[in-house]
Every structure is written in structure tokens, then in C-alpha cells.
Amino acid sequence: MRGSSGPPGKQGPKGDLGLTGLPGHKGETGNTGSPGQPGPKGEKGESSGQSALLTNIQNKLSSLEAQVNQMQLIISARTKALLFARGAIAGEKIFVTSGKELAYDESKAICLKAGGQLATPRNSEENNAILILHGITTCFHTWESRTFKQKVLFDTRMEN
Image 1: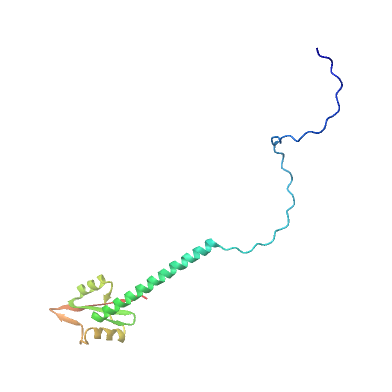
Image 2: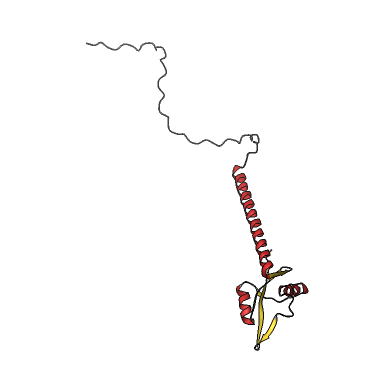
């Protein structure tokens, strides 16, 4: 059998720390504090994105410049070959002939198809170029069977 309980005993020594419990519920947000002092200014960094883009653009520009220079050389060589065989130049105009004598309308159509127009000298330099082109003939207009005929001769402005 068991007897009755006695009075509580003295408090014993403090025990070891137990395991940490689960976190509690989040409390309400407090008031915002005053702003802190600004920090020191950092060193300037490299803008690698912009630098790479600039380098890429410079490379493309250099490539395009080289292509334009190459095309200018090709155009110059072809212009010289054209003029050597059957052309003359005066100012910014190039005069070219096929050497054929055709009716006016047919001559005009051929010139337009080639991207030019029938030669119409507007000054002495252009007139001299045409005369040299035709071996300094007296005139490149002739009448045959009441039909106006003209050597196919056209001019075009050179692109700069």
C-alpha cells in the first residue's frame, strides 16, 4: 500500500540546456528606422557590355570600309576598260558608243535600256569628248532615205 504524499522537496540543481524548439509565429512589422549614412563611392567598373558592342561595331565598320574600297577599285578598273575601248569622259559624264548607226527612236531606246540617254553636249568639254570618241568626224547626224539616223551614243553621270 501506499502512504500519503509528503511536502514538496527543495529545488534541485539546474539541468542541461534542452533542444531548441520550433520557431514561433512572425510578429508585426515595426516602425521604419531613420536612414543610415551613405557609404563610400565605389571605383568605376568596366562596362563590358558596351565595350564589346563598340568593338563589334568598329570591326563591322572596318570590314565595310574595306569592301567599299574594293568596289571602288573594281569600278575604276571597269570604267577605264570601258573608256579605253569605246568611251570618253568629260567632267562627271561618261560618253559611250556602240558605233552603230540607227534611227533616232531606236538609238534613244537602246540608250535608255543601258541606263543612259542620248548624248547632248552642254559645254565645249563634253562636245570635245564626243568629237574624240567619233574620231573627230564632221558630224554624227546623217540623213538617209529621209530618216534621221544617229550613231548610238549615250552619256551617264558617274556615281561618286
